[in-house]
Length: 447
Image 1 (cartoon, rainbow, N blue to C red):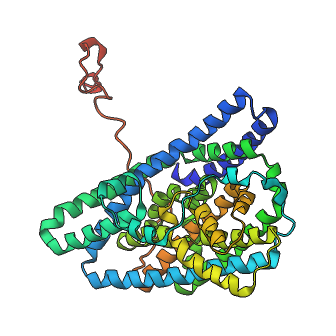
Image 2 (cartoon, helix red, strand yellow; image 1 turned 180 degrees about the vertical axis):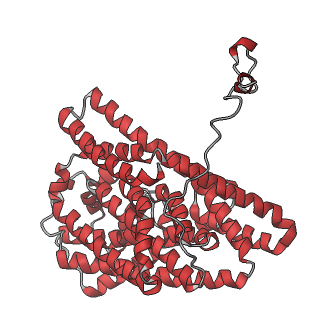
Image 3 (cartoon, helix red, strand yellow; image 1 turned 90 degrees about the vertical axis):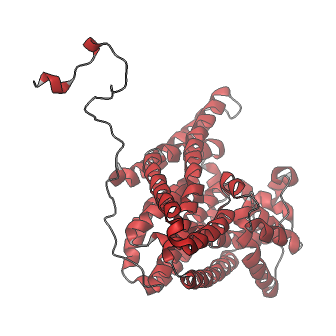
């Protein structure tokens, strides 16, 4: 199954688009059949996403605790953290700056259908105000169980850092808890194997639901915006992978091959969380020790969302262009600096990208209602930026590992995972109170 998973996911994507388009053209949007079909499609993807979210919190907690406890040297943690933040800041400037550059070169907002957003306020609805101080406070958990229950990655990271350092200080006394955390991490990755078998069906459901509701015609309406945004993402991929190649050399091609499944899952579901467990697994096989990936990936998912940051700068200037507002270069630089700070809060805020874009528009007296311009096409844009987030964090984690001199030789891309027992001597009948003539023991037949 693992060896064919990529092909199955691609098949699910193609079939999802085809079936979704058939439903979009074959049923009236207000019909009962259309409602039942779209709900069923969404159910398929929601089940998968719920199962993935089930894994995220315990997987992050256990991997960080084990990684820090095995690190032994607290100075190593500080060094890795400093290098990680340095990389994240550089990547953020590149992502946001490239977004500003490309939107000014392409100018997709010129001539955009502004007249379609007369009821924009109702469409956008109430958006939580972006507050930098609230974000800083939200990093620190007041209840570890609440952080786990809500899958707040940043709060889990903070708690796990304290727990890992404390267990490292306890030495032998903390060894049983470290072994327990190791077993928990392995168990979560084993469950990931089981859940991933459902990924092609979930991918089918996610794309079928989107295409059934929006249709492919909407891509024609926003063809210029979608095309130019994806060209910009392709350029960002080239820059990030080229930077990675400076450190990794030819192994950058191996990394791309190893992370293609997490990228496909992120792209088709538009969910970074959906790709996280598989990304952990593939980076393990690429040669990244868990002590590095367990620290870097949760941190990156909070501070290194390269695709999302590029989208925010691109969308902000796109809206200004749509309303015929000419922003001087000085104002655009201020927008870049603002997004550098505000985009770091996206992991802790619901409807994150929308919140940051809306807050930035309000700060620079730009029309907030312009957010409605991108809502119709946001799902299709979200798919590309989410896959980019996976690429950015995979490259960052691999580069920091190489920088630390800890990158190991890669394992085979696919490894047969342990299977749950299915064939036992008793044939599954052990423990059942069955009549003697209903049970045939294969061992007695040989006597």
